[in-house]
Image 1 (cartoon, rainbow, N blue to C red):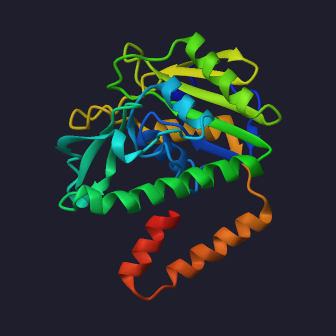
Image 2: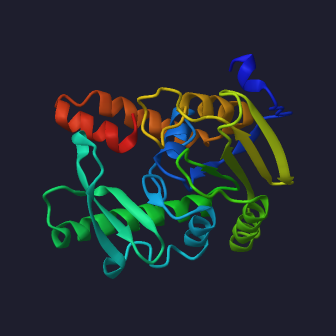
Length: 266
């Protein structure tokens, strides 16, 4: 990490976690964690847009109540613009979530919904199972540059209180990244809101003028994550992942190999 990135950031000792996962605000949080090699699986709040910090906390602590009910989904009459994976966008009128990467363009909604619902049910079950198995958990939220309203310190602490009420016996921390475009790009400040809640503020908006409005400097955030914490995996889990990754690389059929790489992030 460059000296510039350290401006205002003082991590006394790296914290160790058995599980680190994103609750949004969109794809960029999960992408930053993956870049830092701290997330290995897809969870329900990784690749979706919409809602706000407290709305996403509510989903997590409520068992994802009405997360993707068919009756709540509205046709936005738009697509995600991703020509490599062009999808129709649906909005959940109940919780304000936007599903941008799930309903392939040209596939009728009624035909696509069942598979999409099953996918999110798997991700929800995976997340809760991984939380249950992890003694030390870090929850990460990264604001998007095009967010109109950000969480106050009181909101952040309220969200953490709900997490602790959901998991009273867990060692659980919350890391919240707040965007301030008035700051010099690459410079940050930090504020310990409570013993288990850290807020890092900085200008991490992607500086390329051609970048999408919601794009962030993922490499920068990944470096900060690496300076702040360590993702600890038990050796049997590490060995299983390494064996699987080697097996995937040896698959002779390119399409299958690429599909498995995408699935397991090899």
